[in-house]
Image (cartoon, rainbow, N blue to C red; front, top):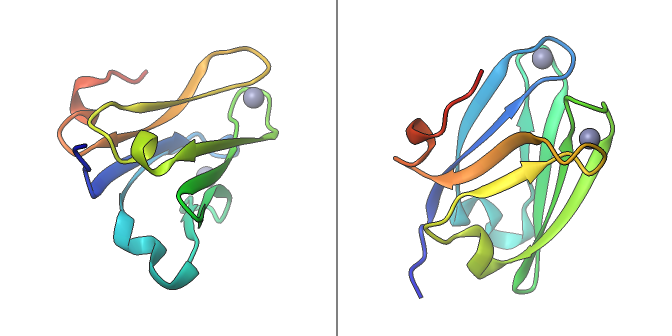
Length: 109
Ligand SMILES: [Zn+2]
Ligand SMILES: [Zn+2]
């Protein structure tokens, strides 16, 4: 199994509309730490943590302005495939978590 230990997480802020890309790596979770992505306006966009071999992700949705939760395995998160974050209400794409180099391929409006 190929692990991409370094990825980019990308989400748009529902409050100010700013698109925030941030590097994230497996090492951010060392010692039971959680990863947090805050917008420059102070809005928390995403919180992510590890529980054993799986990861939970809570992200602020810019479409319905609620918080969606996702649980994925280590393998699903740190693979070469982008993980698309969708709105549970509308099934539209609201963000992604992808290996470095792949993010540029995805287009965002
Ligand atoms: Zn913001
Ligand atoms: Zn939503």
